[in-house]
Structures are given as C-alpha cells and as structure tokens.
Image (cartoon, rainbow over all chains, first blue to last red; front, side, top):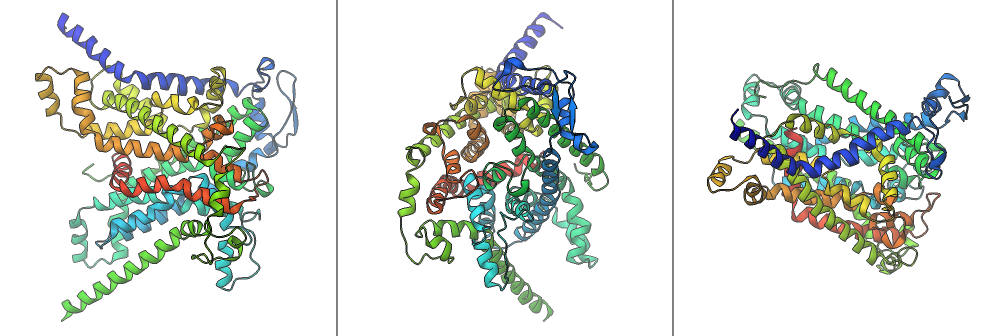
Length: 321
Length: 286
C-alpha cells in the first residue's frame, strides 16, 4: 500500500464515520449503555426514590418472578433481605402469551385474505386499499383506545348491534374478565393494514406465467393458492410473522387506556409491558422492572430464533432470490 | 357461446367482489364514523341514539372537550404536539439520512459489523433500555421536558428509518456519483447534491411516519411529560379516562379524539403513495 493509498484510506474512513457519528453516539448512549446498565440493575433492588440504598441481590428479582411456579412464597436474597414472590407476574406472562398467540395468526390470516381481495384487477382498488388502511393509521392512538372502551361497554355500540340481531343477555365486554382480553385482540387484528400492504406488494411480484402454467392443467383457484401463491409469498409471511410478534409482545397503550392505567378487571388485561411500567413507575421497583425487561428480551429472542429455525420447513426461497 | 357466458359470469363475479369489499370496508371503519357522528350528539344521547346520523347536532362536546385539563386548553396541547412532531421530523431526516448515506453508499472498515448492529436494534424491544434511559434523563434534569423524546431522534435511534433510507439509497444509480466526483465533489458534496435530492420520496416517507408515530405515541409522553402545560394531544386524551377506567365526559372525549385524528387523516390521504411505498419497500426488501 502506497502512502497515497493509506492517506485516502484514512480520509475515506474519517468521512464515513463522521456521517455515521450521530447514529453511533445514539447507539452507544441510548441503546448499548442502557442495555448493559439494565442488565446490571436487574440484579439489584434499585429504587428510583432512594438510589443510595441500592443493594446487589443476585437472582432475587428472577426468583420473585418465577418463584410461584416452584411453590416458593417468601425467600431471602443473598443480602439477607426478605423478599416475596410476585403473585401477578406469571399472570402478566399468560395474558401476553394468549394475546400474542391468538392475535398475530388472526391478524396475518385476515391481512392475507384482504390482500388477495385487493390484488384483483378491479377499479377503485387504490381507494379501497386506503379505506382498509384507516384502522391501522389511527388504531394505535389513545383516541381509538378511548373509543374502544365506549364501543364494548355494556350499553355500547357493539351490544346495540348484537341486540338488533336478536342477541340478549349481553355482557359488558371490557368489564367482564372473561372477554376483556378478547376485545384487545380484536383491536389489534383490526389494525391489519401494514401486513396487508406488504402482502399485496408480494402478491404483485408473482409472475403471471406461474399461474398460466397451472390453469392449463385445470388447477382450481384454491389449489393454485396453496400450490403457487403461498409458497411464493412464504418469506413475506415469515417477515410479517416476526415483526408482528415482536410488536405484540410490547403492547402497551391500548391496555393502559382500557384498563385505566391498571391491569383491568381481575388483571385480565395485565399486559407484560403494562406491568413492567406499573412495577417501575408506580411502585418504583426499577431493579425488578429491569429484570422483567431482560426476560422479555429473552422471550422475544427465543421466539424469533425458533421461528427462524423452523422456517426452513415452510418457507421456500425461489431460485431467483 | 361459452366465451360470452364466461364473460358475463366474470363481470357478475366482479360486481359481487366490489359489493363484498365495500360491505367489509364499511364494517371496518364503522366505529370511526360512529365516533365522528357521536361527537356531535348531545352528551345524554351518545348512549341512547346509536344511529349514524345524530337526531340533534350540537357543538357543546367540542366546547367542553376543548377546555382541556387543569386549566390548559386543547389549543395548547395541539400546539405542543405539532411543535414536537416538527422537531422530531427535522431530527430524524438529518440523522437517519446521514447514517443511511454511510451504510448505503460509503466504503469504510467495520461497515458490515455496524450495519448488523443496526439491524439488531431494529428488533430490540424498547423496554430493555427503558429504566436506564429514564435514570439518565432524570440525571440530566430532562424529565418534564420534550428533550427525552426529541434528543434521541437527533441521534438516529429510530433504526427503522435508517433501514428504510439505506434500502432506497442502495437502489439509486451510481453513475451520478462518478460524474460528481469528476466535477470535484467530495463525499459530503455527493450527499447534499445528489443523494438527498434523489432520496426525496424516501425522505417524505420518513417524515410522514415520524409525524404519525410521534403524534400517536403515548408511552414516552406518559413517562416524560409530567406538567399539564407540556401535555401533548395524546397525553391529554388520557385525562378523560379516570383511574378506575371510567369516563365522565364521553362527549368531550369523543370530540377531542375526533380532532386528534384529523392531522393524520389529512396527511394520509394527501400523501398516500408514500405510505404504500414506505411500507412495501422496507418490508419486501428486508
């Protein structure tokens, strides 16, 4: 390497790193450092209001989370500090798992169904597509969460409509612990728009001759769908599945508003993120909240890896990609 | 004969599909239409009058809702939201396009490594940085201000937009760069004179989604905006819901909820193609 080359190598790197600098600082200060710090805090009893008395309690926070599964109630941390197992943590895990396992598949199936409708050669499709996207555009807002409360009340719009259809003895959906979580599932399935648009773009990339080849063989539409459409868009299904799963695990706003800042009736909508917020900011148990955050990271990480590892069985990457 | 028959069959099928799409679409947005219509109904009729067209129209909900919270009106909340969103847009455009230019166009050592890191942060749940960020911002004395929401955006922490812009910049033709180099442009000149102008569609997408997500974001505003004078629309709407989850002024809540949606709605319908492009490119090419 000549002298000129070396100096141009340094110059090139300097310029590039100057462009990268804001991101790099952001990553170090607002992502990497907080991640490591919260990992550490998870092993302490850090209380935001009295940071001076923070003690290292080993796996205390983790026993607090999972102890009830092993029949533990009271225990001592390594400092000798008396601790009690959290009776609500596993409830928040089961609420969130139910929500993720039910809402994500429903949302994807519905998004794909609508995308198939929209992929036909019809007039007004851009307009229809826009209308179907409206729930996604607005659905994550506080406004819609407030509206949802109203719609699913005992004397709300949903019961009125069901009443017209002849149903009687209708419950207050949000105040009934049996149904409250399902109304939130419905709320997120309703926001299928982004997945729909991604599916739609994928459907448009299927070469028409793929279909022509099979229609000569007399394959019907349903067969075509399973033999050609699904395999072709399977990488996109994988992408949507992972992105939707990650965001479903983190649901907060809707649960917070509908539960009035708490976990709803009998903690039926005590979502993981909501409970983490309550622990950290209502009870000031920020060490515990940090440990909860790391468990969430692990849960999401494990699910992502498992989905990727098993995707080889159902995702086909065409020869062209 | 059979050709003619299949033609009429297919046009009947088309009409049926149209009807199906329209019926399903109306059902989809019915709750929102109902909300807008109910915001014009007298408070006592929101419960009894379930039709879409109000039996009597009133603006009292807008008047009572506008009064806001703790003596601060919704005028202030809208102003706060708007200013916060505009600064967030400027911050994201500058910082994310710089990072994206480095990742998408420049050659440097460690590029693969940092790009991989950036992709990982894309999937990282926000909760895992939450507590330390709060402690940090509290130490800086920023809790109660907009800085915890805004400053990270100046440092390209919204990895989604970096990714979106990288995808776009990678697709831009490179021969223009070469022409610019011959004209004596350096990397910085190429960024300002070639990449930014050509990336305008992707920058518009970035601006739009930044606006929407900042406008609708609730969690950070709940965490960091502690004084009513600093409340944003999204944070202020929460004040209609009591701690037990009950709402006393439904009319006001629905009226302000309706108003809060107008900016998103207008932007969406006027710049629709950028939405579709943004969602599709960042999704597909991933």
